[in-house]
Length: 198
Image (tube, rainbow, N blue to C red; front, side, top):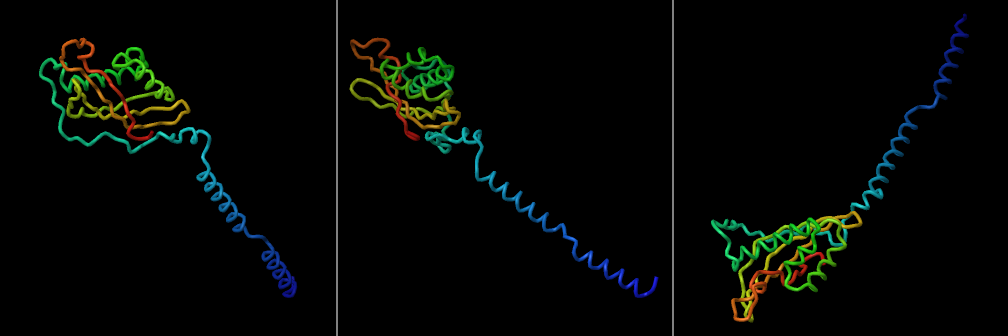
């Protein structure tokens, strides 16, 4: 092979190499497309994620008052007139509604109509639990004693979301006045009022 033919052959090889497409462009495009898909998946939520979305009553920051005083453990039988006895009523009520035992739970109310109305407010939830705070100081009015106990209701809605709502439970007992019944002289739930997430 002559020198001139070798030069022509090498020149032809060079032209073929210049016309060959590079692989960097397609790889760059694929990376951009995958980044776009990732961004799209972040921006849009799946139906399952939407079902987990908080409801209008979800209040993640709702908590009980920060009372760092330790609860006094009773050393003997609890005085039925004491704040501890009032707190026990709330604890029993909470345990019963967690179990769905509404008839027994309603027995801790002083009025059946008010108890049924509040049960209706909780009917939108499929699961209900309670956090119970420390009872406040007792207050007297018109022959009765009242105590307010801060609580937080939390659980799941029937739609699949979660909820957390603060409330105050007002308990009442009638003083030992002539004509009062034994049931009236026991602590009972007078009302429950929402304090957050209403």
